[in-house]
Length: 152
Image 1 (cartoon, rainbow, N blue to C red):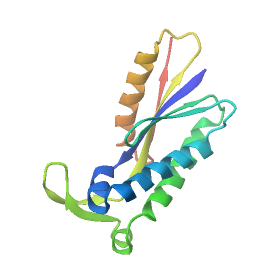
Image 2: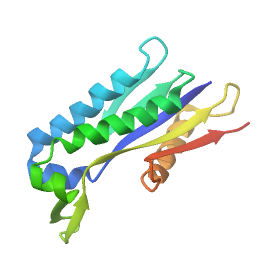
Image 3: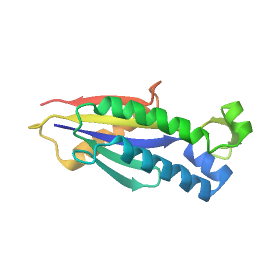
Image 4: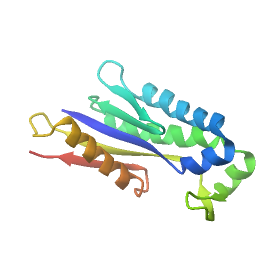
C-alpha cells in the first residue's frame, strides 16, 4: 500500500509575476526542501514534476500527519517570502492570468492524496490522473489536503 500525493502551490503565478523569478525559485526550493524533510528517506519518495508541482509517494504509516505538517510549514515559510505590506494584508493586489486586477491571497500549498491499496487494478497513469483530480479538490479544501481512497 502507498499514498500518491500531488503537491501544488496556490496563487504562485501572481507571486512570481510580482516578485520575479528569483524569489519564485526560492519558493519552489522551499517546497522541495520541506517535502524532502517531511518524507522518510527509507520508504518515501519526493519527485519534482515541474514548475510548482511535486509528487510525493508515501509508504510511511503517518503520511497524513506528515502532509498536514508539510502544508503548515510551507504556508509559514512562504509568508516570509512576501514583503511586510503583503504579509499584513494577507495577499497582494495584482493582475491575475486574465489581466484583471484583484486581491490575491498569499501563496499556499495544496496536496491531493490518493491512497492505493495493494492489489487494486491501477496503473501508474491512472494513479497520476486520480492524484491530479485530488489536487484540484485540495485547492478547495479548507486545510489544503484532500484524500481519495482507491478501492478494488
